[in-house]
Image 1 (cartoon, rainbow, N blue to C red):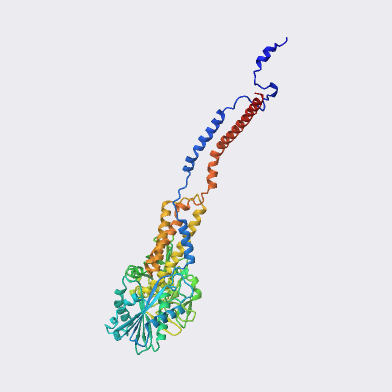
Image 2 (image 1 turned 180 degrees about the horizontal axis):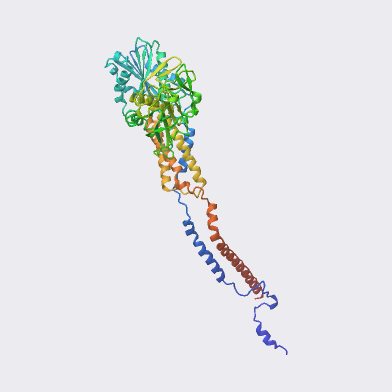
Length: 604
């Protein structure tokens, strides 16, 4: 049946391209819809909206820490050694001021001190940051030069108010008199180290007192000789603390990282079948140890404890010496003297964590090794009959009275007499001084002069405490800077480490204490510097070893990803792939529609 020509013309509307030009695979007449794309993007956005809540739930709290200040402190302490400000004053008594110029004397003292001092700035020393003043007192008149403020502290003519001739015969009396004359003047005016030179017709004597003064008495024929001796006193004692090199090594810094020292005193009875000895430690603690602890308070928080042990033989053997009628143990036997298997000394409950314990042992030998004596390398018997071990403590061998090899012994408990106990603790005091890096002798022999050093019942003189305070300030700040520098590098390398507010406050207060210590050092206030530096070190150590930080110090981002990826990675991958797939479909359908529009526009 033939198709009607009019019907065919009605089906083909004007403007439509011929059917031969339309390809359904590459073209479409209708515009693609947004519904599927909108739904997939909505699902993706709803998933992404939960990301902030998820990140908030796994957020690691980090208190703000001043990394720049921490690194600056660590670098500055290493590159710029801590130097203290020191003030020195020389008083020449009965010298003719018309023949000697005070300005030249001050310059000569400075020059001699520079010759004796180290050319490099040593941490904890005075370096070149010191001043020298000179006063010449003659016939009631005084001439001053140099540091006028320090020189004015000396009241002209006051030293001769008492019987100077009689007092100079007794060093202890003259030392007390000088302290009475000068002590009130120095309160609130800073620390001034003073040397008094008295011209007198007798042999030259140089004495260093218990406080911050010394005196030289005798026939000082030449002023240059007096100036050299004065410079030696200033540098070797008031600056270097009586040590040979003017510094203390780290093995003579017995203060723990928490600023504490526990002095543990142990009475060891080697064999209680021979005799058993006890002691009245409480009385010794109150009378002898309490002043020492108060003196060392700027350096450390010191506590004491005691115990009595039995069946504690030494691990080395002693040989009988017929000539000395004693059992002898030599210095080569000292490493084997302490019997760590039988001497249960580490029983302290007062010290824990980073505290340091110093053991002081009184060893009572058995009848089979009594009397027991220590022989020195030169063949002589030790006067103290004891020895020290740096950072550990000291040992004193105490032989009971009427000690004999064939004595039957007694099982009755006896007490060490107060006289013997006082002698033992005097030895312990000397050992404690050596553990802190100081000399324990009363004489200091130089190439040309012998200096007499007065001792004090407090164990440490004021100028020795100044020296120890300067050295410990330097050591504490160095340890503080090292610890804070390590903490800064650790925290920055582990971004997932928890930093609580307590740690941030400890770091802040540590930096402030270190700043105060350095400020006090610039003014020469050594005891306050030691206290502040100790506080800075304690806070830095507490921050570094804080338990909340160390428990998650290795909680890295990789660990977090490994924990949460099994929950969120499969879902997120499907959603992302669906959005990409739908977006790609929409682009393809839009391209088909544009192709149809091009053909349609050509045929229009």
